[in-house]
Every structure is written in structure tokens, then in C-alpha cells.
Amino acid sequence: MQNITPCLFALFLTNLCLHLSSAADVLYQVCGTTGNYTVNSTYSSNLKTLTSSLSTEAVAEQGFYENTIGTAPDQISGLVLCRGDVNSSICGDCLNQSIQYVMNGCPYAKEATIYYDFCLLRYSNQQFLNSTDNMNPNLLYSTQNVTSSIISGWDPSNNTVKNYFNTVVNTLLSSVSDQAAYNSRKRFGTGVINITGSLPVIYGLSQCTPDFSNNTCRACLQDLIDEMPKYFSGNQGGRILGVRCNLRYKKEFGYYCLSGKVG
Ligand SMILES: *[C@@H]1O[C@H](CO)[C@@H](O)[C@H](O)[C@H]1NC(C)=O
Ligand SMILES: *[C@@H]1O[C@H](CO)[C@@H](O)[C@H](O)[C@H]1NC(C)=O
Ligand SMILES: *[C@@H]1O[C@H](CO)[C@@H](O)[C@H](O)[C@H]1NC(C)=O
Ligand SMILES: *[C@@H]1O[C@H](CO)[C@@H](O)[C@H](O)[C@H]1NC(C)=O
Ligand SMILES: *[C@@H]1O[C@H](CO)[C@@H](O)[C@H](O)[C@H]1NC(C)=O
Ligand SMILES: *[C@@H]1O[C@H](CO)[C@@H](O)[C@H](O)[C@H]1NC(C)=O
Ligand SMILES: *[C@@H]1O[C@H](CO)[C@@H](O)[C@H](O)[C@H]1NC(C)=O
Ligand SMILES: *[C@@H]1O[C@H](CO)[C@@H](O)[C@H](O)[C@H]1NC(C)=O
Ligand SMILES: *[C@@H]1O[C@H](CO)[C@@H](O)[C@H](O)[C@H]1NC(C)=O
Image (cartoon, rainbow, N blue to C red; front, top):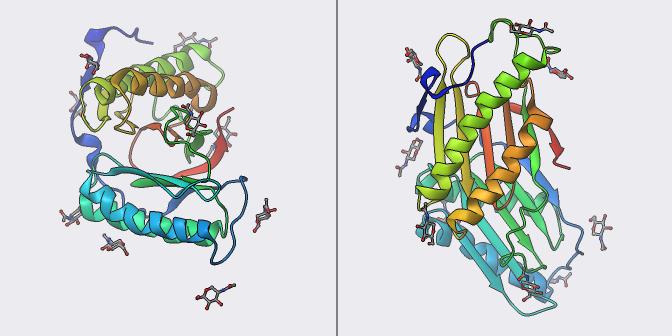
């Protein structure tokens, strides 16, 4: 087992993660429990006003937009965020799709949240835009566990090996999170860790909503990093989706399945 020292790995903060997967599938959808609206109500029309502008505004604002329409009790707030590396047509398509999908999937819910690979959308009758709350993040696991053919000497019951893997993932995610928080106006970071000879190449990605300050962003991501070993130890990939910040690591590009909740 190698020790982790800076000379043992090359950490490249490059655009290598930026390949787009073809998946336009919904990753996760949560219908809120803050009440239902009715057909032709003021809330319904406020929702329509909000959603009709979200996509075009987000595209105009480089992938992030939030707005509040109306006054209580019919007030609605919405937030959308596209992945930091997608272009405007993918961003706009994803948001248009998310609006349609979530309104079908959560009919008449005053609050709903939906995550795609390339964008996320949340709206609610609660004012959440002034909050740094990450809104009960959701977990996605890779379909595959680490095996001894991927990491030589791998044994799921051997904590030394597991801790080594977790430390490497932690190093990668800390680095991409620093990049997102301190080195990106979009609050978006990607990277690769490549420890030749002992581990496969592992890719990482972090993103916050760009209205977060550098330190608020970093703290939001750190909360997720702290949760990783608890849920993803021994997994080839893991991902935590929050409205305010999200991150992921993966051995290679592919599919995630099995979702759950942090907590
Ligand atoms: C765990 O794996 C390490 C590295 O392969 C090995 O040196 C150690 O003996 C293993 N520990 C156990 C309890 O098997
Ligand atoms: C809202 O509608 C859903 C299903 O359409 C229902 O299960 C839920 O009880 C309703 N909630 C309220 C507060 O009426
Ligand atoms: C909603 O408004 C439309 C257009 O005014 C009307 O045709 C429809 O009957 C109304 N639906 C309900 C349930 O009130
Ligand atoms: C956006 O990216 C997609 C996928 O890489 C590409 O097919 C498309 O041509 C791009 N569109 C624009 C407007 O750059
Ligand atoms: C998304 O929907 C809006 C409103 O319907 C439309 O103007 C816009 O062209 C759509 N964007 C894309 C990328 O399809
Ligand atoms: C956000 O705004 C709402 C309504 O204006 C208020 O009730 C709530 O306390 C605010 N939350 C924070 C964290 O400032
Ligand atoms: C991965 O490991 C977990 C925990 O040991 C196990 O529950 C799960 O079935 C494994 N998944 C696969 C695809 O082997
Ligand atoms: C973080 O943001 C603060 C306030 O905008 C700024 O003064 C500071 O230089 C930033 N730090 C880094 C490392 O970007
Ligand atoms: C990982 O490092 C090896 C050896 O330096 C190199 O051949 C390979 O291309 C690297 N892979 C990536 C994805 O950086």
C-alpha cells in the first residue's frame, strides 16, 4: 500500500471531466409537502410566470437564475442551475425538460425539486433563496463497487485499503472544491487524480450556486465531502446532489443507480 504524499500522484485540474454523457434522464425528483395549489389559482399563474422565464433567463445568465413571483400566500420562489460545463443549448433544453417533467411528476405540488445530469430546478412557496441550506441532499451510487481487478489487493473487509481509497477520493474532492470555491466565477471545478500503478484514474466535479461567496461555497462542499466515506466507501463512484452545492467522483463515466438520502 502506498502512502499518500504529494509526489505520488499527479493531480490535473483540467477539462478532462467535461465529456458529456448522453443521459438526459432524471436523476432524482422530490415532490414537496408544503401544500397543493389548484387549477387557475393565483399560485398556479405565478408558477406559470416563473417557469416561463426560467430557461431563457438562466441561459442569458450563464446557467444560474433565481426569482420570486407574487406575494404571500401565493408567493413562489424558484432556482435553476446548469452544470458549469454545458453550453447554452444543452442548458436550455435541460431546463425546459425539467419544468415539464416535474410539473407532470409532482402535479399541483407547491414545491418540487428535480435533478438532471446537466441541470437542477427547485420551486417552492417557501422563501428559500436567501438561505444557504442545501435542502436535504440526495445520494447516487455508482452501479459498481471497487474490486481487486481495479485496485490490486482490494479487500472490502480491509480497512487499511479502504481508508487509502477514501483518502485519495477526499484529496481529489477537496482539490476540485477549492477550485470551485476560489478559482471559478461560476463556482465550478473539475479534476482528475492519477496515481499511476496503484489506482485507476478517478474523476471529480464540484459545483455551487454562483451567488455563494467563496467561503460559503467551500463550506457547503466540505459538508458533502465529510459525508462521502460514510456512504461511498468501496464504491467506484458517488455523488451527492444538493440544491446549493453538489459533487461527485467516478472511476469512469457511466451510470449511477440506487438513490438515497443523506442523513
Ligand atoms: C490490508 O491490506 C494491506 C495492503 O494490501 C496489507 O498490507 C495488510 O496486511 C492487510 N490487512 C489485513 C488485516 O488483511
Ligand atoms: C397534495 O396532493 C398529493 C397528491 O396529489 C396528496 O398526496 C397530498 O396529500 C396533498 N397535500 C395536501 C396538503 O393537500
Ligand atoms: C380554468 O380557466 C380556463 C380558462 O379561463 C377555463 O376554461 C377552465 O374551465 C378553468 N378550470 C377550472 C377548473 O376552473
Ligand atoms: C452544445 O454541446 C453539444 C454537445 O457537446 C453539441 O452537440 C452542440 O453542438 C453544442 N451547441 C452549441 C450551440 O455550441
Ligand atoms: C425553452 O422554452 C422557452 C419557453 O417556452 C423557449 O423560448 C426556449 O426557446 C426553449 N429553449 C430551448 C433550448 O429549447
Ligand atoms: C428569508 O426570507 C424569509 C421571508 O422574507 C424570512 O422569513 C426568512 O427568515 C429569511 N431567511 C433567512 C435565512 O434569512
Ligand atoms: C456493493 O457493495 C455493497 C456493500 O458491500 C453491496 O450491498 C452491493 O450489493 C454491492 N454492489 C454490487 C453491484 O456488487
Ligand atoms: C474570497 O472572497 C473574498 C470576498 O469577496 C475575497 O476578499 C477573497 O480574496 C476571496 N478569496 C479567495 C481565495 O478567492
Ligand atoms: C495517468 O498517468 C499515466 C502515466 O503517467 C498516463 O499514461 C495516463 O495517460 C494518465 N491518464 C490520465 C487520464 O491522465
